[in-house]
Image (cartoon, rainbow, N blue to C red; front, side, top):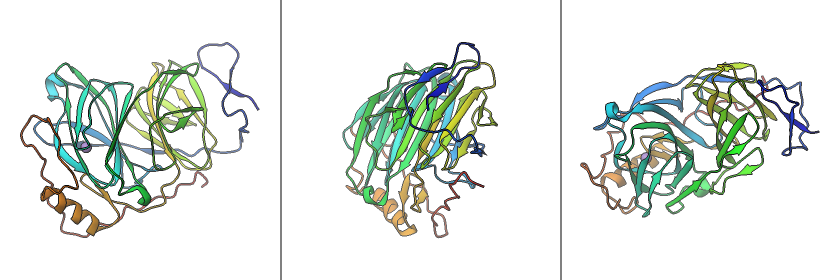
Length: 339
Ligand code: MN
């Protein structure tokens, strides 16, 4: 059947949108939304940025392969000092940098040197090991965005370092503007390479708009509210909250209920199906994995390479001490929408 895409304010007939015309909406599906509230985490270092972390949380570790969601700003750089993160390592993951405002200079040991800007996704693949620095540029007055991590499946954990940058195009959905930075949303696909079925997008709702997105029922989804207040299905989400929807759902409906419009980050993926151990900047599969990664970084092993051109002190962020306990895999909460 055809898929109506309606906006709340304008009274024109529902727009017919071409994608997913083969999907039959099942109105009997009740969409359960789990509301994940952020916790504030000071990142430390010479400039004390505080972020709002919604993933991982005690109640949920993963959404698809998304394993880390930090949301920050808008910060007045004149007050906060901006972002200044000296070279530090990563393993077993991809970092996805997405800005709403500001500009960040990225350098990594794979040789990439790039500027992260609004609407442009920077994806760094750590694989076996990489290190990078992130510094907001002098012309940045306001810093606002998300820092996201994607866990690499076991089959790709040891791949080589990599870096990709993609300038997204705004897609007018009628009442909302979509930018797809990873995977496929509403029939639009990002060219950035991923290693598991996953999606990531920014969605800006016009004041009063209501949008239906047809989604893959094999995916679980998260909707992070950057600004505004929305209803996801029939659950209200305030700014900075993450609404989680399990698998088995074919349609996500989001409505701007704050009245001023809303900016959202949509994340999704097939349930990851592997247990991961996360500590500091590392993703592994066991305590011993993490111990080895930490030792390699402290020993300045070739595993991580070196960042060229970073000006600052220290030249490498030392790893914190390991806790005096055995690191355990994170528990993966049930992922189905059915209750
Ligand atoms: Mn990093």
